[in-house]
Image (cartoon, rainbow, N blue to C red; front, side, top):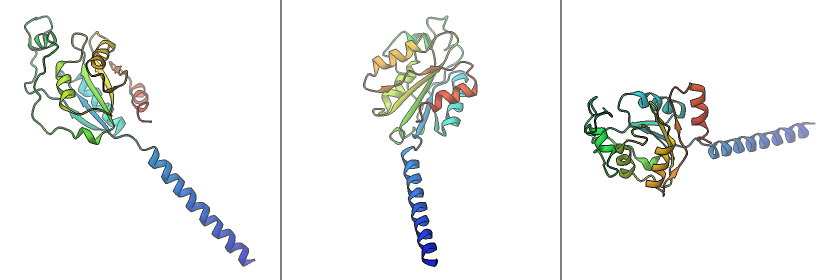
Length: 190
């Protein structure tokens, strides 16, 4: 009787060990991708959404900061001579970034890139960020906020300008509730 109990106990120990090893292996295979949430926000609207995305993903939040902050006069889209109007009318414009601690992009698998829509495009400072970092092999997920434009044209332009990068469709996130935002963000964390 003791031999039978010992044999059963040994068999159970082997099974439990194998199950634990399988569970550990599955957990390693389904690790959440390392995520960077990089964003530019002129008025704080895009920053709010970026903070929510970083909270959902557990990712690193990084503000893309121009060397010279935009003033209200700079953002006056009715003035053809305002800074933002001049930048957006020149596709080659690349506003300088503030020298700050930049993220080690190589450490991330997924990069959410957020921006307000300006003239149906991503602000040129986004191009400066993209061109300053090696984003090849990363999953790039654009998100935007806007007073009236959609995101599709800005994403199409980014894809055309940087065709070697792995762009996803992205999403316009005006007034998106936290549940919808969470579902969208988590769809990229498989």
